[in-house]
Image 1 (tube, one colour):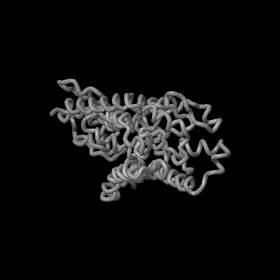
Image 2 (image 1 turned 45 degrees about the vertical axis):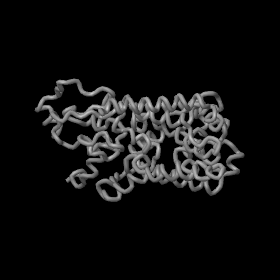
Image 3 (image 1 turned 90 degrees about the vertical axis):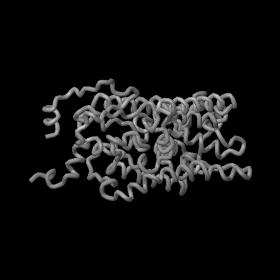
Image 4 (image 1 turned 60 degrees about the vertical axis):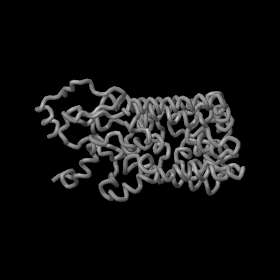
Length: 322
Length: 45
């Protein structure tokens, strides 16, 4: 008896690792890499230990990308939102809210699946061959409860805590960036502290705390898919509000679905794909469509052209399910 | 209301906010903040 026969969980994990990439998946990998390079193109900052201060910094980028990253050319919308809320002279940035609303209406959480650098890092870590754990299967009640955590973090750390001090005319702090954001530690804190002696001398308990959080999230990402995106990220929570209406979405053709549930098993965000494809958790990564044996799922701007015809024969489907 | 109409309304609202924000000087305020090193954001502060 092989190890795979002993453990269906291991077999499923191997299937997730080894499934060949579809054209869309390859395109997505390129997108993620090029976006990271394109939005963090100030390479001199990594050597000097400084940040870019040019005119592009007045614009937001869609993903979680700390504007104190040495390479960052644009501004993180979540950092911008908190810093505006924490400023008693401004309080609300219409520009940032408008940017998030427009991006949400166009892409929803496709930003998480296609652009976010920290999401990409988690995906790469998940490829490491380790035992895999799926909270939605092993502890479904905890998974359901933890999914709400990102909304609590959004309300508390992104909105209320930065905003409350401004009611008495004081400056607030960007609490999420300061106490939680592992992306800021990875892409900004560590590169800056590594090359800037003055900053290294200032690093204290807070840097240690954020470093610890980063290690925890990176370690978790090797055993479970995208733990930060699933349970913690408040930017994902904001874009998730728009998932039901966003133009870039999952299209489902029920007439050709054979209910094999491959899509649901493959989903890194534990979405029950065929009938709940566009819920707030879906990151539009297209992994579901890539494994669908009848091509009943499609991720994109355009819906299926009617009448829909599956390109595969019944025999082909049967063979692919063996 | 269809999904397309809702999407269009939300997109339009976002556009109005974005343009209004730019006219109000929100981008300049963002540039002023984002070009300063945020010590708290990198875990020093």
